[in-house]
Length: 452
Image (tube, rainbow, N blue to C red; front, side, top):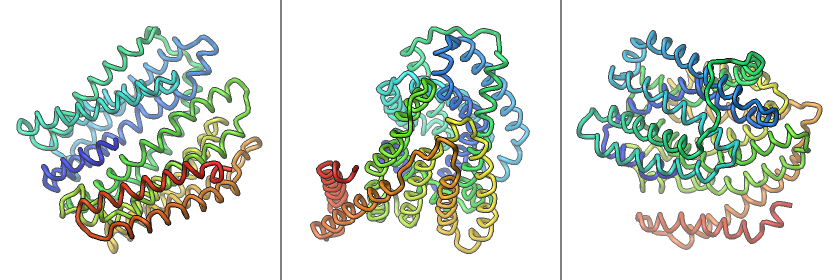
């Protein structure tokens, strides 16, 4: 994903015009929404209950039930998407070919999501990481081979379909699952998955609406440049920060679930986990805040200069959103995901209503600020929800850690500015390298004092 930010996205912005970029981004978000409503919540059910049914020696029934849920849900989403065809094509400038390709793309994406959760449950982290790197390389190579054969946005999606399908085959062959899919659905397993995961669908749709509805609004008004600027800024920030943030969920969530299912203590784990999250993530987020103009100048064409205004806002938004996921593990352990859903519906609905007015007056920057304020509201509200055994976070320690880390990063930023005062591309790169090397070196040297 980091390769996506600093090579693939700049490649697209230099090859494609802003309208083609906007169509690609809209198609990607439609895909994201379909996967959110179909395969994503099923994949989350896999990681949540894989350990439980392995203990009970029911993995065959569990995976078969999961498979048939996936088939039914995909058919349902396919019907809904086809019924919405005219709206999608007319309102968002999506071509019929892009529309069809997006439908096809859902299948390999959904399969990959479920395979990734199995990799998480089985701790195959090298296969997980290697498959992501391989996908990015295949994606670029196939796109470059097809860009002169198909319309530009269609070439991107075709390259994605091909690359992801290859990765699905590669992962399936590597893990060699020994559980055949039977024509059976276990009703008890079905009920447990639905009870846990269906609220997650609504929650994910709320978050999808929060993060991506501005692009749809801009596209509806034929503001292709605004769609592209907003989407490229979000993609750049997300693809840089999320690989590191997701690492915490990838590593910690299966461990916490395993401890929970084996009735082991999970409380001591949480404060240290969040401290380490801030330890790793804060310099990256502050890098977007301190060097946003330098980053944009290095990787994007001049038409996207306004991205530098959005990167700090998006960086903080992603930082808080991923932190909220860690805090909200309490809902998953208690199987009370509907509480997060209820809060998400209320807060995001208010946010979207405000956005309708803010966008008209303040355009992309207004939409970005509303997004950040909404994320702050979500994380504060979710922190007020307590369960009997969920007081597992020492907030005093976390705030002390944050203050120490922020102070060190700020000093390192000041040093990098003093060391390199010129304004050309080489100097920008040297400033970034100096800041990150100095910050993480000091963090590591002082880690025992920082992570008390």
